[in-house]
Image 1 (cartoon, one colour):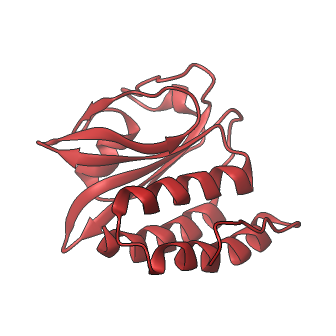
Image 2 (cartoon, helix red, strand yellow; image 1 turned 90 degrees about the vertical axis):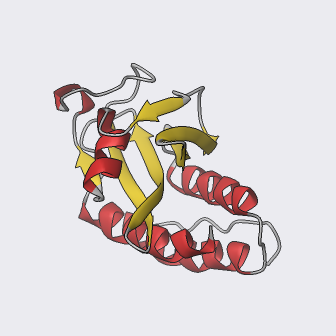
Length: 159
């Protein structure tokens, strides 16, 4: 596939339905993990116009900033700290409608109001995190959770 992205019009569901096969096509013949993570972050941000989309990768027992799209971000996050560190520790996705109400939230930007965080899991071990922030409260829902979980499920073994 050429490195062009077709962005669907319509509902969030319509956009995910068009985006998912494009992401798979972008990654299927590219063995470099960083390239794939960078393209996925860019495609998700461009499609949905989210404030921040990126990955954190586990390195020496902490999350280290990986490929992302958006403003400068926190570089390192400890396991169990903030939304990303909690998703890592719990090995589960977290949908946070209001980040100000999340205990221990790490504010990389005061503009972020809601967040969805999903672990990348291989053989029951978290190898990284997909983190997406929005400038509006309650920006993420079960549709995001379902499709982003699907993305993380097929992506993780490629890394």
